[in-house]
Image 1 (spheres, rainbow, N blue to C red):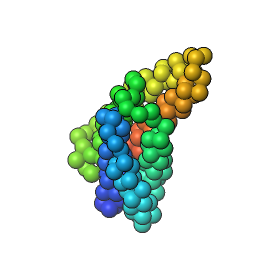
Image 2: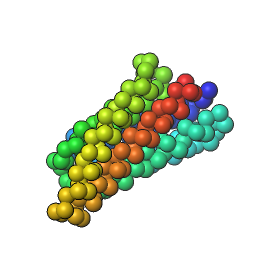
Image 3: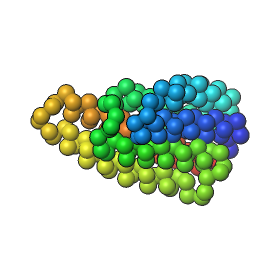
Length: 170
């Protein structure tokens, strides 16, 4: 079982990621939320390294936060084309559930709800990526969107992975 300090750091890091995803989904300037990610990730690394019982809690969430921060630079200016706002809002919800799960305030089934959000978003993102890859017009723009969709899909995979690992530690 992970130590309380570790779970608080996981919750804080997931909350920081949720705030970034929410700002991106809403088309707001995400600068403040993006600036909060490195300190949250650093605190997560410190907490996990001090807690020998939960080293596997670091990698999925840390990778997810780095991917989300990287996506910020790839996204076009608002308004974002669909399915990006929906996917980013689903990522916000998944990360909020992850934060609740780590904090112990989540309802039972949080990991399953994250899995359901991840599956639905991944399906939609795969369809959008396939459409972008098969559209011969605007190759460079379509390649960019294909990368964005792949990155978001990876974020959902990492959130689901972190939820599964976290469920074994709370």
